[in-house]
Structure formats: C-alpha cells, structure tokens
Image (cartoon, rainbow, N blue to C red):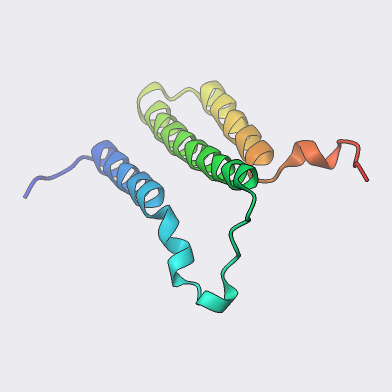
Length: 111
C-alpha cells in the first residue's frame, strides 16, 4: 500500500470529489420520487438554457476545487498571506456571483 504525504492525500481527495460531483451530478434527480420531480420544459430553447446553467455551475465548482488546491499549496510551500487573501477574495467573488447571484440584488428589477 502506498503512503501519501499530506499534500498528495489532500489533492487526491479533492480530485476524487470533483470527479464524483461532475460525473454523478445527474443522479440527484433519480433519487427524487417521480411525482415530485421538476418537469422538463417543453421549449427546446429553454431546455438548452437550463442545461448551460448547470454546466456553468459544474465548471465553477471545478474551478473552486482547483483554487482550493492552489490555496493549500500556497499555504504549505509559499506561506504568503497576501496571496492567500487574494485567492480567498477571488473564490468569494465566484461564489457570490455564480451561486448567490449577488449581481441580481442590485440590478433594476424588470416587471
């Protein structure tokens, strides 16, 4: 059995988590009872738009996982607090924009 160091183990676990999330993301709906599943829209253009939103979410999730690995490496090897703060702010901006939709909070609402 191979023995991993701290860095290799963390990166291996993060890579496995990303693979499970990206490849297994579609199986979430299969666990919802049939009567409670959201209905697929009949409009093909709307289906494409919704699919693009899910793909973007998976890309952002993968980017956040990679940035977390970079943060881990910076913390162990470079030990630069300024770089860690910049990476943290960038990750926070990604989360606020793509998962919390903060840009919509301050935008004018259309009726």
